[in-house]
Length: 192
Image 1 (cartoon, helix red, strand yellow):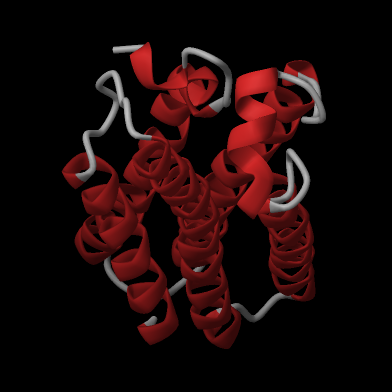
Image 2: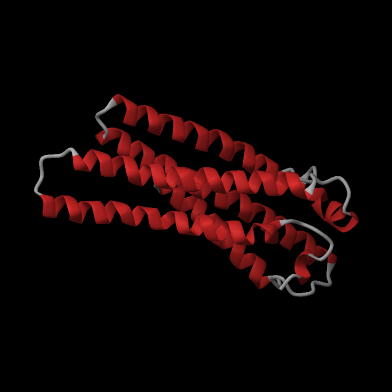
């Protein structure tokens, strides 16, 4: 959780830096544009790192209490998929146009970057994996809870609290709608 907090702090810092340098207004100075594009790139990478380390943290917590082999195996598979794809997605986000230091030239010329469809495909796939992982991390503990010997009122109370974990997937669903907004292009800073 401490690593997640550090990644989230970096993510928020880059978002604040983007806003302080003009956000999505018409930026004029080349140096400001370069810096802001780099911050957008890094904020995307730290967003993925934050959500991934949070899922790892929850997964490791639940692995300590899950008893059935199929439940543990499911968590291991979900964690492996999340870690693998998130690692790939961070590298895709950072190196989508080659070296991050040369990103501005690629954004202005529109050449040398991965195609928009490929970037959106990776983004949508990451979001889908994230949503599925969030729901698996809620549903399996509820099954485990149903088999416990505690009274019904306590089961309902604990189940509602566990189900609140599904609320986290709402951010992933909302992110699906705005995913096109993180694509670099000539009018990247004029979208709003």
